[in-house]
Amino acid sequence: MRETTTVRGASRPPRVRPAGWWWDALLLAALVGLTVALATDHFFGVDRAVADWAGAHRPAAAYWVARLFNFLGQGTPLTLLAAGLGVLLAVRLRSVRPVLPPVAAFALTYLTIGPLKVWTARPAPSASVKEPFLPPEQTLPLFQHDLPVSYAQSYPSGHVANAIVWYGVLALLIAPLLRSFGRQLPTWLVTVVRVVPPLVVLTTTTYLGWHWLTDSVAGLLLGLLLDRLLHRAPWDDLPLPGRLRAWDRPFTSIT
Image 1 (cartoon, rainbow, N blue to C red):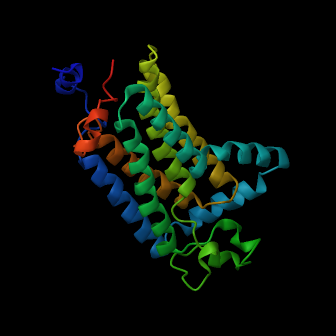
Image 2: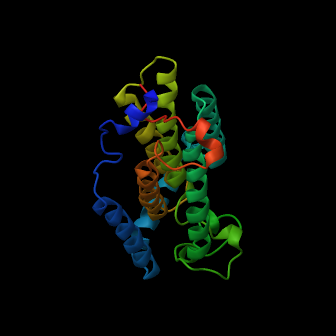
C-alpha cells in the first residue's frame, strides 16, 4: 500500500475557520446587502467623505509609496507566480494536484469579479477629474450602463478580491513546497502572507482614489468568500482521470 494512502486517511484540521457554511452565507449576504444599499443611494456620504479626505491628504511622496505597495494586488503577476509555484511543486512531487488550486482560482476570479464589475457599472472616484469627466455626484451611483465599460468598472475592487484569493493560494502552495525541501513554514508567517498584502491593497487602492471605500469593502467580502470556497476543496482527494493517476500524490498533507 502506498504511503500516501495513509496520509489521506489521517485526521485533518478543518480546511477553513470558522468551519461552518454559516460564515460563507454571512459573507454573501453582506455583499448582497451592500450592493442593494448602494443601488438605493445609501453610503454615498461615507464614500464621498473618505475620497475627499484622501484627496486632501495625498502629497507626492505618499502617493508614490501607496502606488508602489498597491502593486501587491496586481492579478496577472499573482496568477503567474501561483501557477509557477504550482508547477514547481507538481514536478517535485510528481503530482498534478498542486496545479489545481491556481487553475480553480483563475476560473473563480474570472467568472465573478469581471462580470460583477460590468453588471454594477460604477465609475471610480477619479472619473470626475479624468475621462469621462463626470460631475462629482454622478461618479457615485451603480448601474450606469450608458457609460463605456472601461469607465464604469469600480465595484467591487478587483485588486482587493484578487489579493485575498491569490495570497491564499500562495500560502496553500508555499507551505508544502517548503516541506518538500525539508523546511517548515511557521503558522504565523502563513497568516502574515494571507492577511497583510490584502489589507495593504485595500488601504492603498482607497487612498489613491482608484476605488470608493465601499468598492474595497465589497472586494474584501467577495475575496473572503472565494478564498473560503477554494480552501474548502479537498485538493488531495479530488478524483482524477485515469491517465493522471500516476501523478495523483497529495500535496497539502505531505510531511
